[in-house]
Image (cartoon, rainbow, N blue to C red; front, side):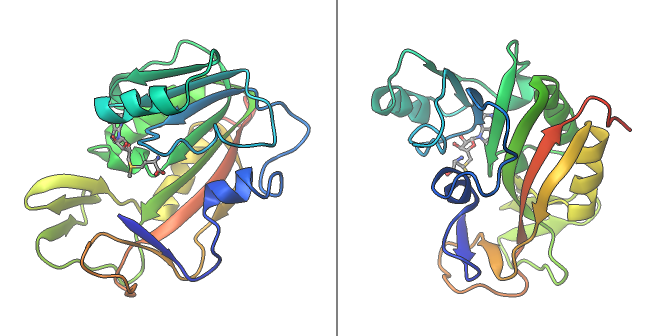
Amino acid sequence: MKNINDYDKLDLFDQFFVKFPSFLPMNRSYSRVLELGPGLHPRSLPNRFFPIERYLAIDRDQKSIEQCKMLFSSPSATFECVDIAQYLPEEEFDLIIDSSVLHCLESYDIWLRTFQNFSASLSDGGVMIGEMAVKSDRMDFQEPYFYDEQTSILYKDGKINRLILDPKVVEKALLFCGFKIFFFTIPLGLKVIFDDSRDKIKAEDPDVLRYVVVKDRSNRY
Ligand SMILES: C[S@@+](CC[C@H](N)C(=O)[O-])C[C@H]1O[C@@H](n2cnc3c(N)ncnc32)[C@H](O)[C@@H]1O
């Protein structure tokens, strides 16, 4: 998956961790961090802006986890190979990072349940930041992709590839999970290209949603 960003050259996480703190709520600590599906690219560990006392990264890809362990070894960092859909966090975190991971889940129900599980592990006032593919107005796919409008599932060669939700559904789910929305935007010209052979974006490609939400226990619907 490629993100083509005509809007600005920084990705969401560079906005947080390079230009920190322009996009994060201030006056709180971000010392306990949970990163979902870092792959080979943990977003927050190399940051220079706030001290991390506890860092947990979970990814189902064993190879990525082994690589991360080698590259980012530290007494405060733990890397676990698990399926996030099966994972119930046992600790409290101040910051949860979802960089294009939760949209890999296989259905809206699993996505919502997983979101709720992670939201429950945030401290009051804790923050979740994320980036995900979302449905665009003229979204359309060519073979070998097929998008099922009913389930919001994108198939590739008949197999589930991504969940591409309507951003209004995501907004409702975030509020339902008890989050206060701090930042929620679909940057103009920022698209996801699923087709590896193409570099130029099309109006038919999915959009990208970037969000920052704050856990607010008084805000449950
Ligand atoms: C698109 S990559 C994003 C990698 C990285 N976060 C980034 O921004 O570059 C998705 C990552 O999520 C992991 N992943 C997808 N589904 C997962 C699941 N159910 N449980 C755990 N990890 C998962 C994949 O192994 C992969 O490392």
